[in-house]
Image (tube, rainbow, N blue to C red; front, side, top):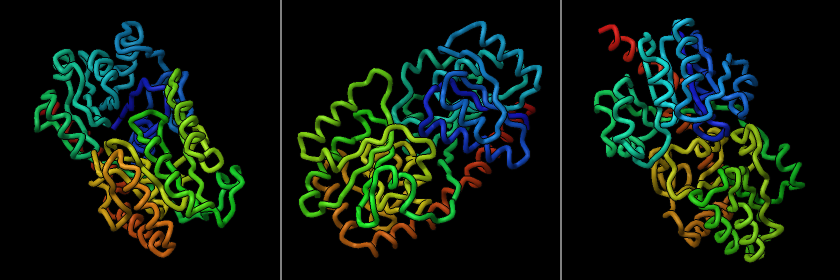
Length: 367
């Protein structure tokens, strides 16, 4: 198949990492895959870094006639079979660019909330051959919007490659001057309020008196213009955590770096299908995550880690303390997490399921 992965996102977070992982997996299975991306984003660099083909267009908004016309001509000239989009803004671009051509549209929904302004999107989503939801929780949000017929809606969880186990004493710890006796609680997340990082800081403040060698590493940056990072830094100072909390900023390949954590925390108010959770599980790290959104679909409480209520720093601190108290429990939960990823959330499985969706979309068009 000749496949396009289309995204107008500048950033490189969960949905964009999934796009690149999927493109790599599809290319490895012999498909011709090209990323259609903006020239000014991290996603373009990530595609090139993995040796994947890309075509750059200045798709600055959901409606830009010149770029859409250029894209449509390119799709027809290259005889593209599938155009796969990953954000609602791109659904219209794909529908307009494929109008009158043979390419089939497939979309992935990465967000939990029901689709905004469904009445405005309903007309051009009629050209959608299939919509993929990354978890059952996300699927329920799509169903609430009533935008896609049930027989065109399918659940395909995110998948990650299973790396070789790596040493917890790696470049991230070295950069932060941390040694083998430091206990690292890590969180990989965009610095925005819904990610619940203030709850993690309050939990750390409860733990620090007993665990003076506790270090919290926060990996991620914020949307341009956001004041939330400064709010988090002020809170850390107020809580007496100035030396215990390190804001590392955006780091490429955070999925590999999380191997250096002792525990990974996913403290969002709700995660669709947490890629950071799966990456840490693949690295053999125990998880403490909020029991909301798609997280309970990825792990079982007390098996691969612990689930806690959202916005409950005391419960979060209590579960972290259980793991800090027991290196053996951390190792065992980490081992179970790797086994769970191998069984249910491997990258090959995600690629195989997505490939099946593409084939059904093409068969439906021929039918």
